[in-house]
Image (cartoon, rainbow, N blue to C red; front, side, top):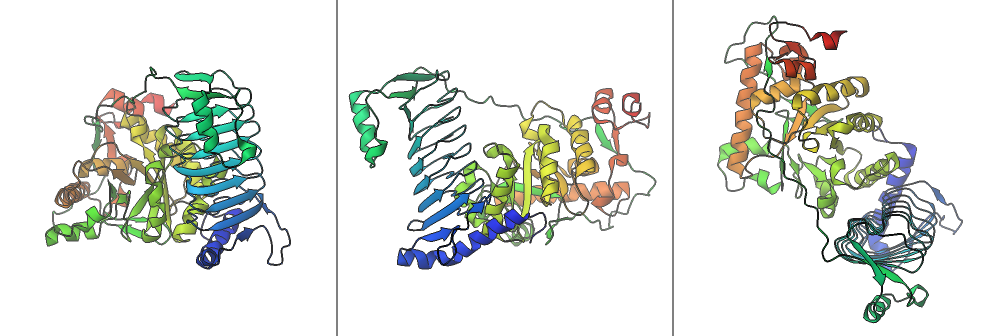
Length: 519
């Protein structure tokens, strides 16, 4: 069992791997694979296993018995029949399959559905069909709040009552309610179905028992509704202004002195020549096939966070926009789970997501997590509980919060939560740093940073990495430090009162933290 895995996780991973070994034969024979029964048909219902049956291919047929956890049937293109209740994110990103739950589903069932049919016999909790893009969801029984939250396409039919704010933020598609319907959210129009719409809805439903009555109502986005566009943030200017590096008692090193800038990540471990991970669209960018030898050599040894086509040393980004690429984590060294790019989830949902990833990528997968710096305590708690390789605080989540204030927020949480040698405390920057800034951040407790380069061409990427390497090496030599691991907050000084007040760093000249930090 990999570090941080619980018995329930190990059970889910084992089930997934057994299914994977049997899928091809079962599809060829058109056989049904069963979970929750012994070979002789004796019922042994499951109790809480999550993350089961991700990415079932077309032609696959699976039946499960018992109460299942979260993230079951992710991106299903086959057939899945759940006989019992199921947790959150059931049949998320449904991709042409047919999924049935004969019990009740947790929140965010059918999240981001692309195509296919989801049938829920005993209703669902909040956010049914959230961010749905296509396909059909049929639900009988009570449904929670915000059904169709943020949907842009597809059809949701509810034979029963719906909770508060139905259609919240919907921009397309249709929600049909054959029961009691609460007042819709702003920007949503509640009205009777037209004769043509009723015929069209019922023609899309094969089962007569799910046909919609003529007195049903529908919710559609208003034609005059304003689509909220997120405001653009101004790039940070001089993000580390007022924070400076100073040596302690060491002499300055000679310019020819070698320094250690590397970071080890994970239990395997993965060796990074620099404490940075560039975020690029594809691992193909890092292969530099038509570049000079100098460019190729730099990029060949530098791991990156990629959205697709990872190399064996890369980390695959796990977010809503990359779901179709998640299976390629088998080709990667690890993954970075972007919590801000996924639907909200509790600890059960997070654990079930880990089951999906370990099932796909193996027990040696280097798993990192990234999330809102304002929720750093919870981020670090999950990273520590599941012994993840790194936890990155996302600075772009709070663009108006100075970096000087983020350093103690992350540092205090990391010191009290993360284990040395297990989880690296890092930062997801919203600017491309230079070598000195990498040194400052490392001294401030962010031992590894991710960033999006200003340019993605192989030559530009290699140049950026070379400049970081040279600048970081120069800083270490100037401080007389043989390794980046030797840097600490004692090497940092604040040159302005505001920065000293926010960061708790020693005030330059005063040579101690301000009284507000020492009382």
